[in-house]
Structure formats: C-alpha cells, structure tokens
Image 1 (tube, rainbow, N blue to C red):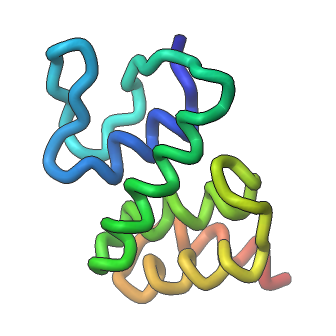
Image 2 (cartoon, rainbow, N blue to C red; image 1 turned 90 degrees about the vertical axis):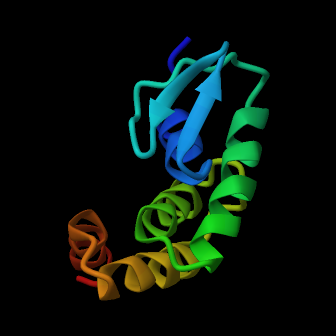
Image 3 (cartoon, helix red, strand yellow; image 1 turned 180 degrees about the horizontal axis):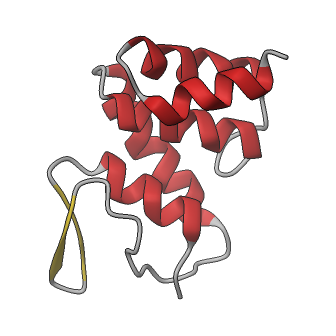
Length: 105
C-alpha cells in the first residue's frame, strides 16, 4: 500500500535512503511502499522528520510542515506548519514558499 504523505515524509527524513523490504530509495523519493499500520506510520514519519528538520534539512522542514497542516501523526496546528514552512522557504524550498503564500493570504 502506498501511503502518500507518510511515505514522502519517511523518504525525506530517513537520512540518505529510506529502506523498506531490503530496497534502497533515494532521499526525497515519494513512491516508497510501506505497510499500513492504522495510521502509526504518520507518527513515525513525523518523529523522523522532526529530527532532520531540527538539523536544518529543508525537505524535512517542508514535510513536517505538511504533517502539521494536515494533522497527520501530530496534532493539526497551522501556526506550527507555518513555522516549518518558513524555515524551509528561507533555505529556498520552492514548495514551502508556495504553501506560505496560500496560508498567509
């Protein structure tokens, strides 16, 4: 089962590769197949992303912002989402800039 944002978050936030069933996927690739375990994959993704985001990785910051925006694996929190989008945008992350434009209207 492909799990959109959770798989993107895991791929974005697992260091150099996200490994599942012995296969390596490049960092940032979103077509990672992960088992569904009742929504816990989002909490795991958020935890992994937070570590990378706090170390200044723009893709992780953006992804963590999405998780907060959608309330996936973390409490839904628009202010927290904006905080992480801003951090990513300051480093030139284009999608984060677009999210900020939408949210700050």
